[in-house]
Length: 370
Image (cartoon, rainbow, N blue to C red; front, side, top):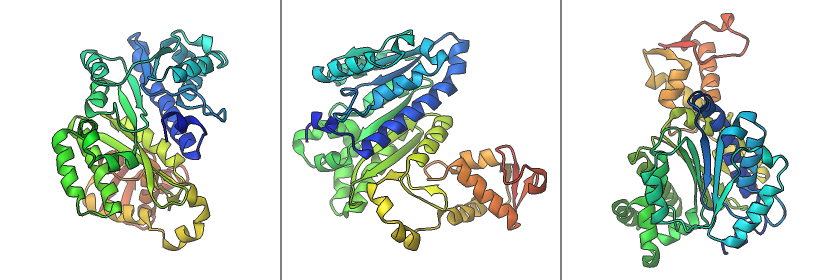
């Protein structure tokens, strides 16, 4: 399968991926906007592997969805800078045409910039020298060439900058022991970590390989300052194997909270209201199995909260901010768990349920664990 073949039809997975990026962009931009407006600054969206704009069936890909979101917001039309890049000139020609056909595209004060650069060390060096305005950075290569820790960190280093990237698990898994692509794999994980990872994988099962590989890239991102990392898994139609991940990285909990809610809503399944953080077309055909064998994650959350916060008093939001990192739980899950614990008499809340709006548990509610 070639890079161009990827755009020949719009798979449901591609639609979900584009929706996650576009929804996060709009929420992120609205959080950042008050600060940049006060300082009379701008925000940016950069996509280094932008593709042709539309799939062959006419479905809009990520660049068009992002621009449509921006056009809907008067403040954003005056402050958003967009940069789209693709080495394939046919792709950028098609993308430019698709952008010009968008209704009201002229409302954007800064018209989209479109380039044909190869993504490599030169682009990384340029970003490393720059102090960027708040930027959402999307890196969506077909494989792994051009994707590196240096590239991600070159943007993430600045305030208000977040990154979303396509992690092609299948190709990376195969490439780890391929000497011909060693330099690309080393650039993605870091040379020392990549060598250690190759040794770890020698005796692991396929499921263990996946967990280990994704954990290593998450730890590599955290070590360079990306404190909050959130992967979203895509599986094939048979639900038999993982095809790829979409990985989000940020230095700020607010971005993590926003993306967690976006990804939760795009998940194809949930148990007790706790999202799977994966999309698999097979889920719809396996409801019986899910009902029979599903875990009870909300019950597990209740147990964890009682253990972790025993004897402590803190607000709902502080509980969520402290405990939720690297878990699948959203703020809504924490509120549901705390309401249940309160009803069971295992915690005390201030104000108590009788003094709050029915079935609510606000961020500021103080919780005392017994």
